[in-house]
Image (cartoon, rainbow, N blue to C red; front, side, top):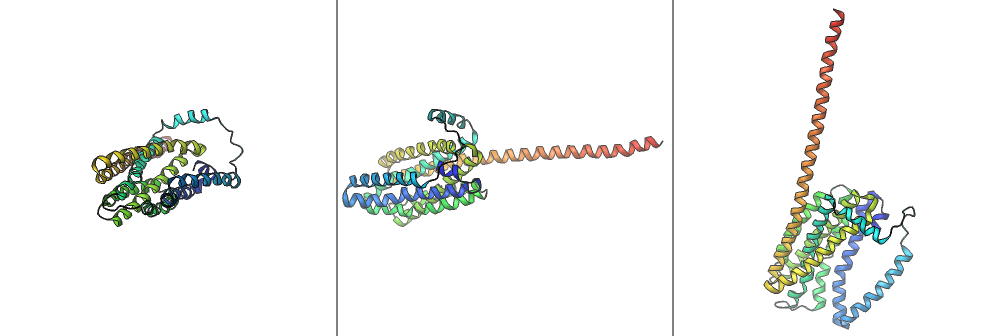
Length: 309
């Protein structure tokens, strides 16, 4: 992701991030179905064998097919790169988008880390391959990621993020019906994945636009929140599911999404207040200039009359 954002022209960066994120989503969710089939047919060890071969093949393709980065950039050491991230964590914009990502992927992890357990037990008793089919439903999120990049390039990243977070909260109302309807669960998964990927792409576009000279480090630092949130969601949903069932996991996922919306709304309110203050200061400055111009024009004729007399 960081490489793609770095080599992409600024005007197309949102679209590029959206396309790459779509690929990530297809890989993550499509793999749930593929690995389910492999585990059912050849056992769980076959999954790691196939993934190892694919990873080696992909490494060879990357070295051969991807163009190098611009040569004018002076390489830095790993320690220096890590230290440089410290300054980002003191910036309001970075922390705001990072916190949104933290709660966003905590909500995402709550669904995907806990979903297989209730589906494998009563009343559904689904097999690994059938559980993996719900990953295909989540591939709608890939479409959301691609479209979100275009919205971000058009300057609508912030309002679109807020709307997507509202959809994310609403999606948990459908996924909570897992014990009653698999169709409602599928609808909730589609909406949830769409909303998550829209916010994810918008976050990265906002940050890379604000820091065009250090896109790699910005995205790398942002992924810290992504990873921590995913880990929290996975751990928390397991505990909630074991203690109180899927309803508790659904409430937990909705709560994480609500926290992300609160962070977004707080930042939006601050931005609005700053914009109003700036507009007021500009208006006051313009009004003062007009008053001085009017006073000068009134003083001019008076001085002329005095000179004539």
